[in-house]
Image 1 (cartoon, rainbow, N blue to C red):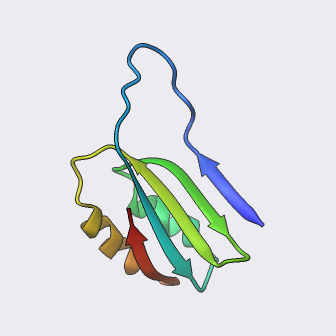
Image 2 (cartoon, rainbow, N blue to C red):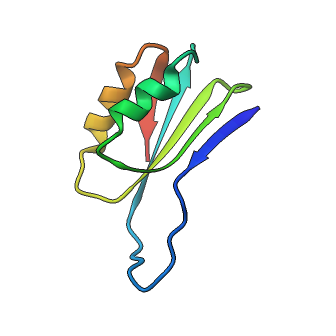
Length: 88
């Protein structure tokens, strides 16, 4: 079972393609996890948050640049229940 939360699609001349950073983490707990992560990622342009219960994996896609992906990964790593955060 995979839960996916996506930002709305925007179309129009103002659409500019920006880089995407994908964060992936192993998880050990799900109660309240998405709420805690949503609060952490509030200032970023989050496009997708998906949680795969079979693989115990969380995937987050953040659009844009101008932020420190290592710092975001370190913040995610501090969330209770999130392990081994990586990004690409």
